[in-house]
Length: 176
Image 1 (cartoon, one colour):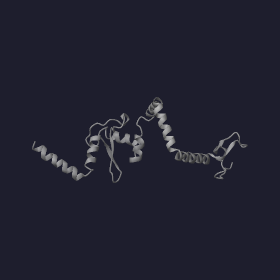
Image 2 (tube, one colour):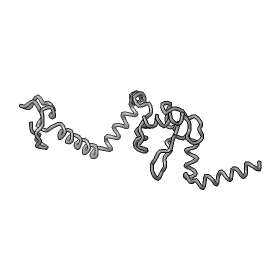
Image 3 (cartoon, helix red, strand yellow):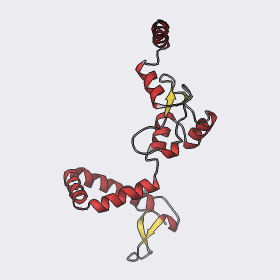
Image 4 (tube, helix red, strand yellow):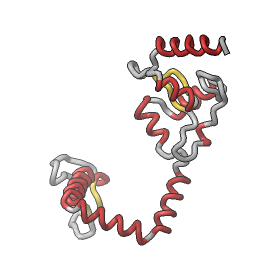
């Protein structure tokens, strides 16, 4: 069959069924049909953005039990939220690679060696551990607890500044 939009010859399986048609299929292939529908949806959304948002807000306000059920189903299906997607996007690291790194560190912070909770125990916005990386190269160094990650961040990962802080602490801890 030949698509009426892209004019490519394709097998019947590449066309949606349509009873009213003499061939039993639509004239445009699935790819062209989906593109057209997607473009229509985008145009419709752009024209009716405020109306759609107001309708969605009204629905959420009038149906809190439905929204709670949707939220609960989503949390059940995705217990770690979008954490794994963030890891992949920000650091290029998969869940398996995080698991390997976690196991290689013995479930401990790479800096202070305090035990860090397993990533499957993630609940809410509080990070159980942080993926430490070199901000210039993007290379992952290890998994850190919140305290160590915050400390390194506050020192701007400046080794000289950290050494200066150590010297300061040693100087005043020795006289106490």
